Length: 431
Ligand code: ASP
Ligand code: MG
Image (cartoon, rainbow, N blue to C red; front, side):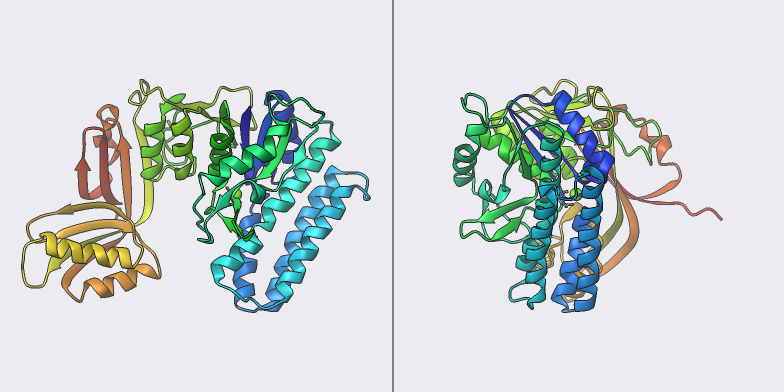
């Protein structure tokens, strides 16, 4: 069987939903699990609703609630002519439960309430798509992902139970999949991003986590392949908004995909690759607007990894140089102090370098965490820093001809390994 994943952009309006039906009809195999995200930017809207709910700003909560409900009703009205179609009953039911919930004051942590509320986006979007597919003759079964994916109770960033999940998913979905001999449809529609604790509390897997859901289910069901349908032709070696000669990477290895997402490439959720790698399940990235194009494939073949260089830009970088106040060397004791400050403020290091008496670290600037980190560091160290920098990572830089490319930048720090070049830089301001 195959697993397909459609993200928010692929179901953002009625035409997009119609297109999903056509992609499934033409490219889906008989036995297929389809993982779908919330429609368009609905997860952001539900996040705002949750924020207002926690602040007990009832007026704003209700405003958001109606905006979100109307958005879905409008899409359904354009997809289904009959106002009595059961899809409308389901939409009303989901929003009725949500409304009842948000009318009570919050009783638990922000992360718990977030998962309870934000998961509604995936529930309603999959109901609409599932009904629509049945309506146009693509027989399918809607399934609640919370009955398939078991997690711990680390709300908003839950970890998967890799023993229970495959057991549950197989038991629940095998009647629909290859080898079963019954009248059930071969296509299952379920939600990305969400799961449930053993006690039945809804959890989420982290923003953009639907790719990961697809990989979890593929692992559990030993799928033949996963296809992530996107609004780009596949994996690109650079952001076309920055590099006008960006090109498609037709094939990279799992390891290369892990490296690229580690350095900040955003095409696929970083956790997606590992479950696929461990079962050797290929991952295709294809365009839902041009589904006939071959797209990219991630598998165990590494031959093509070094054919073209890849460029990954991260903005909003901060570079801090740290000097012990007592002029002691940067050795284990000072390093362990520095790292414990970083860990305390949950700041992930993107790049680091040391000399005898200074230690430089580059990381993503965060409005809240960064000032708190600097204050702690200043207790033991003198620090100097630069803000608003960029970090560029070039994989396979040997063939990149990079010198000319950065003529107009001041380079603050540069680091090279055999395959990866990283630079912290800032554009030279023209006067
Ligand atoms: N809807 C969720 C989000 O926007 C999950 C996903 O799209 O992958 O983060
Ligand atoms: Mg999304």
